[in-house]
Image (cartoon, rainbow, N blue to C red; front, top):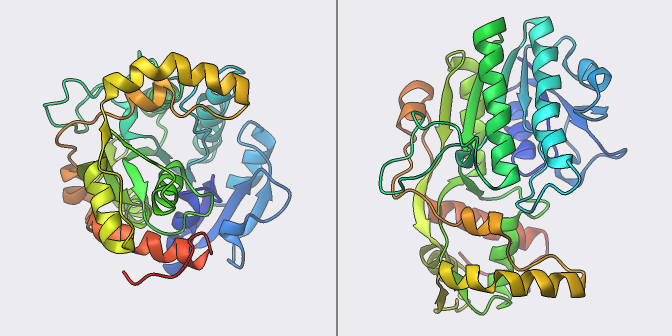
Length: 332
């Protein structure tokens, strides 16, 4: 298989690229920077330097390939003040989809579990939920709008597309590091005095990559597959992290209503300090989850089989140690 990947240097993309190469596929990556990102260093990939907002750049990426994995996104849970979140996540997706449609190429589009309406939270979240087209968070709403556009192109113009919707990703190969990775590293260094009342489903990034490849090979055209894992609160995650690192984790948990009450003050403090706020409305809205997030459809149709959360955190710890981001190497 000849594969093209947008966002190949990112959190999920670099794991997908590795998984494709391990399976013997050739890989071409669209990279916005002029240099090879550290996450792809030493890998046998073809780099196309350009942007998903350029139809010419996307054409150079997809010409001659069998499948396109579209992961490129601007992930930001703050307001879309300059329009770039919508531009990349919606307009960029349209450009990639049109390029695939013109050439008859299969598209695997990476959406998000937060692109779906989650309420009522006491009911399972699965593929039958409608898109969150009225979601207040600009990023999540844009992911929903992009998925809606993909579905329309499938129905109206015959685009051969499959949508995958990952959960909160953990595990190794976190070169940025991600927002979740930074939180784990900060917990290790005791920089976080109190946990927040956060609940999410957690999935190993390598399992998402494997699920995306399975979607390319076996996914039904026009279908959505949730690539998600077990639902945990942050206290459970920090408990696993304490077992693995030997570092004592915070015991106190800030209720979400307290965080909402503090929001005006954290926003004001951010303006004076010039640093990002401790949390945004988008972060707080993303801090709630359904008690059950089902990946049964992906398991049944794609052979999706996610590993356990503790194993993923152990491998994340080993990766952070290899990067020198922790004070000393600890036995898992």
